[in-house]
Length: 133
Image (cartoon, rainbow, N blue to C red; front, side):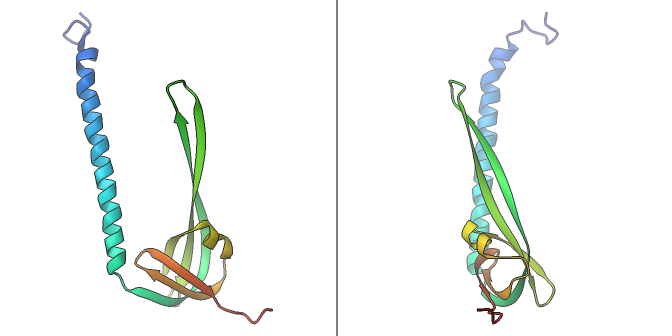
């Protein structure tokens, strides 16, 4: 006896059930993420496009590292960077938006200008001309 009330074959007979359960959980997570993304996209589409005075208050990045391993135990690594900027509106409220790397590089903290956005979707930031040539 192995202490589990059987001959020790429970590992082999339970494995297909475990793999099936994990597949179902994985599939459900993908469906939920897809639903969340589509819901946010729909909400943004239904939101008005706003053009408001704003100041760039802060910038941040999120770096994600991915490690890939194949059957021959050869691994490769890749990273991806997501860029964010927080804007402060005249009312004192703040909003954080995801930006492209190009937009992120152009903005500087303290920039003053006009922000265009729709829901949680960043569209554009037009910096005010401060008279500097």
